[in-house]
Image (tube, rainbow, N blue to C red; front, top):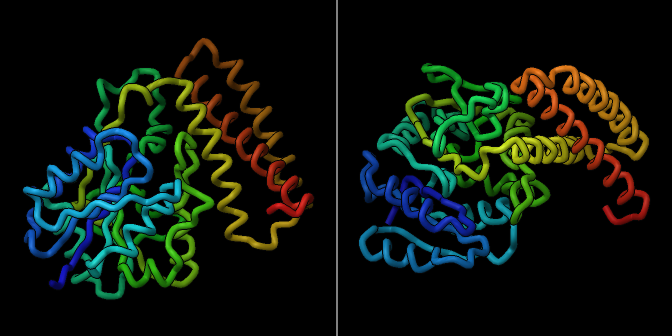
Length: 314
């Protein structure tokens, strides 16, 4: 059977949220015969497999696979390898898709036949409510993405986020998939795996489309709605960006790493002092603290990478 699309959901111990994600993909406007759903379990020890098996009895073209290598990038790559559709669409296990999601993504490949990837708008659903102390500038930590209501070609460093993106399967496989050095792994908050992929696509002059009618709702659980999580996420972002720079520049020497580390350390101190000065304004203080955490993560990863290069373990 020829399939136009494969919707891939990578999951880890989110059985109930996963169920909702799958159900949202069973109510798509795209003809059910044109797509499949692949669940890639990346090491769950809850009832994930049982839940998917129960749904598979009622949902056509729903497949379950267990990926033993830990890491979101490994899971996404496994889903792409197994996909039977010409286009692979990714959605997170804690998200749900609007009814037109797959149809809207697919339409762009027909309208613009020379594009290689399409992503869409991501609305954040706060569970239970958006914290008053959260600066709007930090909402991207929760995958919020809104580039407006017009379909458009986007240029890196603008790119689709991982919870709402699609790509031609042959292109993704030709590019070697997502880098396993980046992306979530267990409790690690490393990210940038999609950023690194879209950087490579941009370097190879491949076109990427933003489609506002392809909408996904990202559900943010209460356990993430804390200042501590924000700082952990910011620290991990700093680490991720340094790794991304290393992957983009294989000639990044120890000397250059140390130079970047010194610059980042200066930024960390500067923002740290600004945070102390803003303690009477919790929103501004958190924003400065997040920046401090980001540059601290960047310094940490640059020093770690320098050590690994020195000991020949990189």
